[in-house]
Length: 161
Length: 161
Image (cartoon, rainbow over all chains, first blue to last red):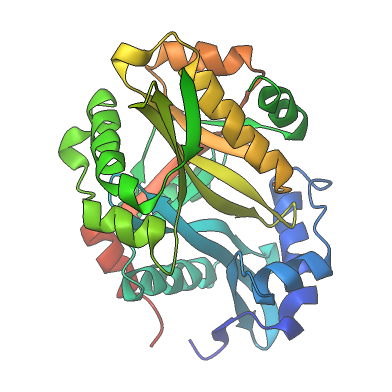
């Protein structure tokens, strides 16, 4: 696939990365959910305490998609998985195997770094993604419910101490 | 009297035991392979993958909480992921779980994390009711997925060289 190149994101990619993140949010029907600014991404990807990494997929030199991920510990395994926070390909570039290329690149990093696996979350209405993951032999942890405290709930709970 | 304190290197053995106790409670004991050496390396070594709190009643270990950072590209900030919270059966109903959760929430809030996130097994009604009372949000549209073992290896074969 000569048209496709995948590379680790650098500082120069941050404007494109933020634009792709906004593209993902729009696809997830949450166009206003992105509050991240370029400076947040620069700090958290390239600062003294990196919190995530990203791969950018270029198609004929144009940013077409990305994957972002970080280490995520499992006390059952006694080692980390790579947690795939985002995997996204812009609509006009789909059907070229870019998503598969990104996902396999992240899987390879996971294995190379001694991680026990990949973990991620998928929206329950995203049937095409679910089918794609099923074909790859992914395990759906259906008995697990995802729970969160937002900032306000966190503060209220903190006061119960 | 209840005391909650950060886990230290000398807690690695009891922390390993507690992790296995939780795994048995979650009916996942057979899948749990973490060793004391893993806990020492990943909790107390040069590249820490998690932090933990130990709860003690009158000097006896009663439970623990274990957590680490995750990243949100939409937020442009990190959250805390609560991997485990567990109270030994003989110490339940003394508010130990609430205290552990409150302490983790306090850490998350004080250190500027945007949220506290975790997972609960769908059959654990007691835990689900407990979290509901604390105003936790259930993100039911998200499904957890993982890719491990042969499926992971097969996917790495698709990565570009």
